Image (cartoon, rainbow, N blue to C red; front, side, top):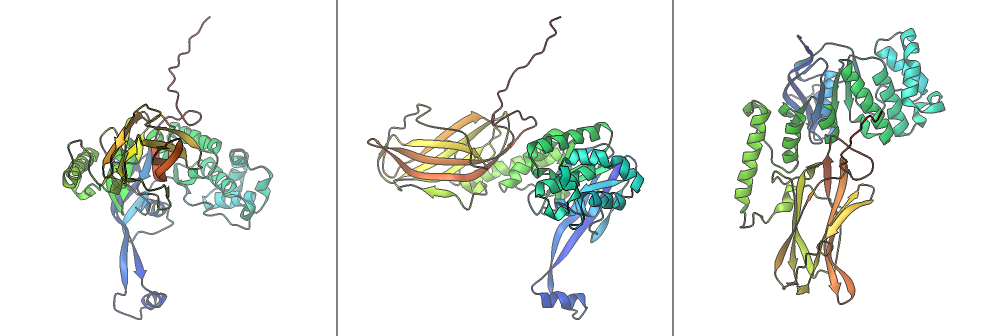
Length: 442
């Protein structure tokens, strides 16, 4: 396998989808010659290689096939077609508690998993203290794992996976469980693995982690490998897929640069087809996003938010913004009656509902004046993204004052998820962008 430790060659994974259990049983028992099912390709002609010592990230939307290919690589699933070659001892953390016996204690599961991976009792004895120290779940290690919280479960599972000295570590979204300190400890272990020349292959929706830790990223969509290359290039393409601007498939794309160029071209073509006005705005911005179906909308109806957009520094409609870059939020409002000095607002909060930051046209001393009935206005907020990497919820509204009374004309709370992609996070919600020097004085 030369310097490759993982080779995926022309892999397909096909599932049969039956209309009823009766049809499934008939097919299983060979009682019908008629094809009574639909074929679903979870993977289509998947090809990629992972070299020794690489940290490679798999990214893509839900249902794209990321977890399926990891299960095939680790032998949990068999491919319908194609082959996978692996050179090295694999430790995999694919699903929460996969391979754990719910009735066994934590200690018993450590020995069970170690034995399954080919270690003797003596070898596991030598690693036990490191595993227990890393998991840090105290006396719960002597209790049945069925009594564990999800956080304790993943702590123990990850501690076993990462402390048995594997040559290849495969992780599927496991780091999304557990507190920030445990996640930091896991990523520190990632770095130690890389320095030791170990290989890491992992799936994550945390684009910041992909950007910071991966040498290379592979983008998968609807069972196809779209492209592979630097994390930045793959994240740029992925952001466009998230808003429906899908690039051509790998059969037409030779490398990541071609994929990026293809998506940029399709983006410009899409702009032309929508009819861009003299200010560079179109009339259907929000169709580029997956909106919150449970948005909290209310107001007295004297004004209505009819469209909005989030646009990155490259002019792309996206809800994924690179930390440190400039981005724009546009809000278009239709006025159903005359309103004097309406206030356009923009707010970001955490997914737990904590307000992070926000502003409005009144704070920014941008007086709108009289908006006549039937008119439409667009408020444009342009700023640098300095929030920490992570997931946020965006809210917009049009409010104002009727005499001395504050009035909400139309509010859209938590209308859109915003992902901030970062390779460096500091403490709290915001990065102070400190310039730091340290000098020896004696």
